[in-house]
Length: 391
Ligand code: GLT
Ligand code: MN
Ligand code: MN
Image (cartoon, rainbow, N blue to C red; front, side, top):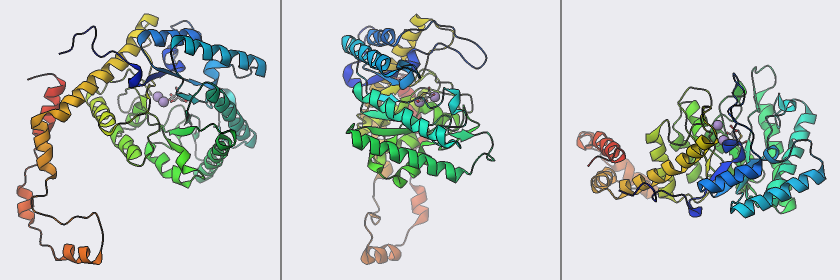
């Protein structure tokens, strides 16, 4: 057992990042006003350095006011760059707010008004300029307002075409400017719209191959967004990983079927969080571990630090548990027997006429197959006991 004071300390190689909007969240909700005072971006960077984070992410307007003139914008970006450098914090990811200003009330890239669509793309290009200046290499696109309350407003296939047009345009801009961004598309089923297009990571994985530059575009799955819809988050992440599309990840927590809670990582579904960390560490995911969450509305900024430390600490504890799980003799021997090919069943890895006639000629003894034990109860209980630290 590691001692409490030194164990599970975040280090730069863990790549823990937070959005300015996460630790800077002031606790306003649809029913109640701010509970925490506003901190400047530089103060938030200092807070992140104090708790041991590695990176900070931002929307354009988390830093630069939406109507800032070029000179003001340059001064702010320069100042922030220096604040990050002084604090030893990097900017791995940048994004754009296409949801806050009322002009986006009907969406941004998918809005019916061509002027809104053009403005949304222009705003994104400018946000990419800011991100590039700060050294970001990942650009997240979350279409929070890209959706409907009524499907009378447009044909959904028209919306998908508009979305494709916008992303294609931004990929060209990326190439033109030589920014080298990887775009990470973030899905959500609903909230703030009644229904949001591209409701899940899987929807985006289907959309990406239809783009002009599919290699430049991947996904940014968020725990809460898939769990809101009652989905298994790990499965979406694993599909993205297997397709080489896991460009970024938003870690937080959420009870299924509720509003978008954005809770501290691991605070609601500890076991799902364990499977996720186990997967990310096992496959060697090398991107940022971004916490897109915020502190309870009951907290002050000391509580915000508790929240941020808690996200990272839980991740590191689960990482250690995952190492134990993968070296646990009982667990591993069960896993081994599950996949063993004792009967010499023909491989499906390669099709040939010969292989196919071999397979067609095979006789399968279903009763014998059924006698093979699948001890998942024991496997799961061993996992639970490992998590509960019972010997
Ligand atoms: C917003 C949203 C998040 C997105 C961010 C990126 S902003 O807070 O709830 O899920 O990741 O635009
Ligand atoms: Mn998110
Ligand atoms: Mn969220």
